[in-house]
Amino acid sequence: MKLAFIIDPIAKLDPAHDSSVALMEAAGRKGYEVFITDMNTLSVRDGKAWALLQPIKIHPMPLIDGKWQIPNPWYETDKGNFQPLENMQFVWMRPDPPVTTEYLYATYILDYVDGRKTKVLNSPQGIRAANEKMYALQFTGAIPKTIVTADKGTIRDFVAAEGKAVMKPLGGKGGEGILFLEVGDRNLNSLIEISTNIGKTPVMVQEYLPDAQKGDKRIILLDGEPIGAVNRVPQSGEFRGNMAAGGSAVQVNITDREREICTQLAPVLKRDGLMFVGIDVIGGYLTEVNVTSPTGVREIDRLDGVSLGDQVMDWLSNLD
Ligand SMILES: Nc1ncnc2c1ncn2[C@@H]1O[C@H](COP(=O)(O)OP(=O)(O)O)[C@@H](O)[C@H]1O
Ligand SMILES: [Mg+2]
Image (cartoon, rainbow, N blue to C red; front, side):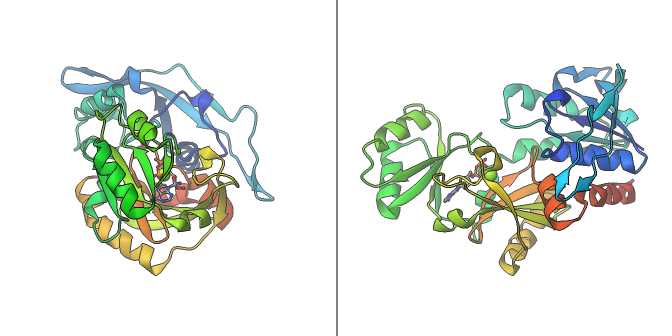
């Protein structure tokens, strides 16, 4: 079996943290041939999607005393060559967000992968359909009070009604640009103007969930099923739990309420070809559906003594 991973430059990945590395390592462990490519090598020729595919070997990274042992070097690549992506059984689209124009174009190129020969994960159409912030809004029973608008007055009214709120850019990730809003803050107008690009760019404004201090839970779903979770607890003096914002990864279980949320999501995720996603849940409320390059696998494996990568590869082998 051959798998290609479209990723950011390999040297920039963190083998102890990035889920893409965990997936590639698990694929190698299963004896699959693994290739990597950068999304800027994607091309369409003769009606087919091609890419510069470099073979890669990930050296084993055992977990000892709760720490990943990273060999140096931790991977080996070869030069590789241009090939049609249909030579692969699976193609993983996993560059980090934000979803830029280049990222969108890459998904259009992936539309030219022959679905009868090769499965693209997540589906390029699904990734385009699912803005990571907006997608959650359709699950009305699961989300906190939320508006999306570029209008200052509307945002001010919402903050006045809620007292406290969180404002989020629609294309952000890793806590970037996430702002805490409060009635009476002298910077309120200015924060709204900066975030909305003076009334031009819609943003998400959500009721502030005090439970965020206890953590922002990442749940990984495979084919609609929750397969693992990790809590991300903000560091002191910070309200954002993202690991990229210094949040610490803490072992956690999945509650009944969260399983219910996953059950609501499952048919919609399946319909949209979103087979490997990471949802964010704060105090039992769904706040985000990460479909591009969800993180958390390394932390869940480390804290729960499991291997989600192996589970994913077993699932793939049954699809093939
Ligand atoms: N409604 C909310 N109330 C309180 N804190 C929130 C809320 N929404 C998000 N946060 C905090 O902000 C962080 C980032 O929010 P999120 O919506 O997941 O965006 P992203 O992870 O893409 O930057 C979360 O980890 C959480 O700590
Ligand atoms: Mg998040």
